Image 1 (tube, rainbow, N blue to C red):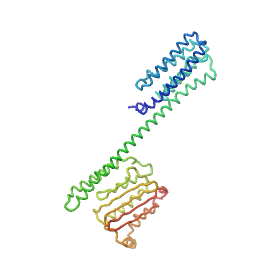
Image 2 (image 1 turned 60 degrees about the vertical axis):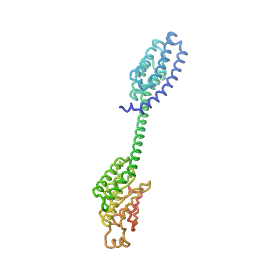
Image 3 (image 1 turned 90 degrees about the horizontal axis):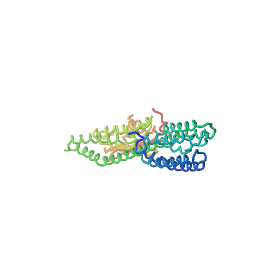
Image 4 (image 1 turned 180 degrees about the vertical axis):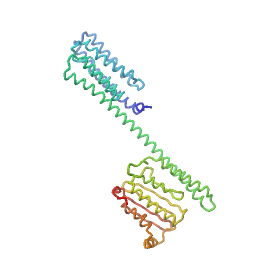
Length: 380
């Protein structure tokens, strides 16, 4: 289906034709009044009456015909323009060759605007050119007023047509934006429902399956399905198309998810400059490496990304025994700078902070990076 045949475009066209119906009545009253006032300029009063009746009859019919989109055919628009041209062409016969004002006068603007509304700027240009050419071609002399009226016909058609096309395009874009927003809202709602229900059950099955006397194979399959479902939900979320030079931090962190690592984040993209996003992902990966190294290969870990207008927060949590007092200072003295360099160093270079909380219930890193100024951070 053509874009111009869409409900939004048709509704805009219908609104414009309703406005044109009012204009037709106004220019008709003006034309009838001038015809009555200048009846002496006609070769006979009967001719003036016939012309007035033609304009009244066609105006009434055109208002009715254009009201329904199904009746707006090329035949109707062509007949509208043909009657306007016909009244122009009979003017020398009814008023004599030296006439000054044409029979229809401004009444022809109804046909001109109908062409512009229905066929946009091309229709307006062709109709305006035809009306202006006929009007000027019938004149024995052309003064400034006559030329000005013809010029307005010629230029007014395409201008109005272009404006009509622009309004229709905006209506189409608005409808598409509303549909996209509705789809995004529905996907987000379904994602929440899946996350709160199915994913939680799969995570529980995976954890219980790996426990003593559990079904290890069932746990493994549940873990695989959980990862695939999480990837599917993330892939369907709106806004996963960052601009040039930007990276979606939520999508980048999602790649760290494994059977033992759960990554959660916003439904929409979290755009950061590429270098900053890479450093945050690297620091998060280093924290997860420490979990595997010090807690165990099968240790569970959780990564949570939160996005705020002025900063982003990434937390990495495990359920290990925690880090004994003095262990970090001892590692730094021995030259093992994994935590200092790989985690804190990266975040500090981005102007952020990396806070460590540890105890018997586990260890948690909280990485906070401000959004402002990241573009100026030089890549190292």
